[in-house]
Figure (cartoon, rainbow, N blue to C red):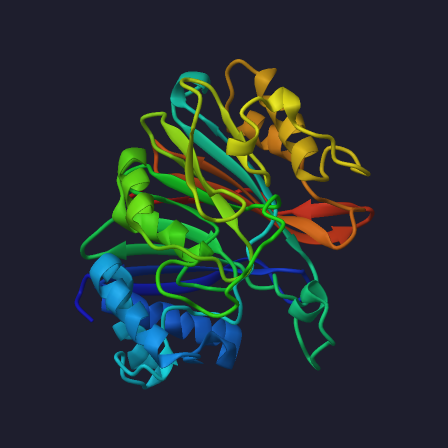
Amino acid sequence: MSASDTVHQTVVAGGPDDLLTVRHLRVSGSNRLVGRAVAAAALDIYGAGAGPHPSVDRTVQRARRRWFAAQHPVLAERIVGMADVFGVAPDDDAWDLGRLGPVEIPAGCSAVFHPGGRTANGHGLLGRNFDFPTGTYSEIVGRPPTPGEGRLAADPWVLEIRPDHGHATVVVGIMDMMGGMDGINEAGLAVTLLADNESVAAEPSVVPQVGLSEQQVVRYLLEACRDVEEAKQALLLAKQYYVFVPCHFLVADRAGRSFVWEYSPGHNRECIVEGPAGRPMVCTNHLLHRWPDPAQLPRDPGSAGTAAYTYDRWRALDSQVSRTAVVDARDLRGHLDAVRFVHPVPGVRTLWQSVYDLDEAALEISFFTSDDGGRSRYTEPLRFALNDA
C-alpha cells in the first residue's frame, strides 16, 4: 500500500440486538486495492457466502470477463484484487468473481427527485425508501428453512470508495458488495434501483450472465458517468439482465435533470422516461412508460393505506410533493415517511431512508433497527459526504 492508500471499516448502526448491523467501509487507492478491501469485508460479513462462487458455465464466465474488460474496466481491475484475497487466478473460468455476496434480490421501494429550483437551498435532492422483506432467503422464496440461516437483510453496508482514477462514490446496499441499491458520485450523479412489479412474466436468470445484473447497474453508472446524458448513453450501450427480478432505475444529476430507465414487460424494448422539466419525479414499482397519464393508474385491490402497493404509494407520494412548493431535506423525509413500511405491516420494513444532496455529493441515511413498543425505530440520519474535507 502507498501512503495515500487507506482502508477503514466500522459498524455505524445497529448490532446483535437489532434486525440490522450496518457497516461503513471507506477505501482509497487503486482499484485492485479496492477489490481486496471489499472482498475482505465481504468475507467478514458473509463468510464462505462471499465467494469465490463456482462458475456455472465456463463459456459464459469467459465471455463475462471479456465484457468487463472492454466495457467495465473498473470492475475488471477490482476482480484482480478479489482474486488475491480468495487465492485464485483472476482469469480462471472455474470461478465467478463478478459478485461478492450470497444472493442478489432487489426490492420494492419509493423514490422522488426534486430539482434545485424546487428546494430551499437550491440543491437537487433525491430521496428514497428501501423496502425489503425481514425474513430469511428460504422464507422469501418459499423454500424449506436452512439450519442456522440468518435474515437476508441483516447486514447492510455503506461503501465509500475513492479510487486513484475515476469517480469517488458512496453506495448503499445489501448482498452483492460489487453492486448496490442506491448511491451518488462526486460529480453529483445519483442512482436508485426499484423493482418492477408489472412485468408479471419475469424470467430471472438465477445465475450470472454476460453484462450487468440489477445491482451492478447502479455502481456502473456512478463509476462511468458524470451526468444524465452520459448515463443514458451508457445504459443504451450496456448489455443488461436480471438475476432475480426486473428493475427500473431513477437517475438524476445536479443540473436538475432526471429520467427513469426501464424495460418493457417483455424485456425487448428499452425505455427512457424523462423527468418533467423543473418538477419532481416520483417513482415506485410500476412501469412509468406504461402510464403516461397518472390519472389512469389503477387502484391497488386490498391496499392497506398509503404504505402498501405501487399505485397507491405513487399517488400518495405525488400528492405529498405536489402540496409543497419548496422543500428541504426534512420535508422530503416527511413525504417518504408517509409511504414507509413500518409496524404493524407484516413481513416487510423500510430498511433505510436515503436523502441525497446532489450539489454537495452527500448522503444522509436513517436505518431501521427494531420494532419496539408498537412502533418501528430508526437511527438518526447518518451523513456521508464525498466533498467534505
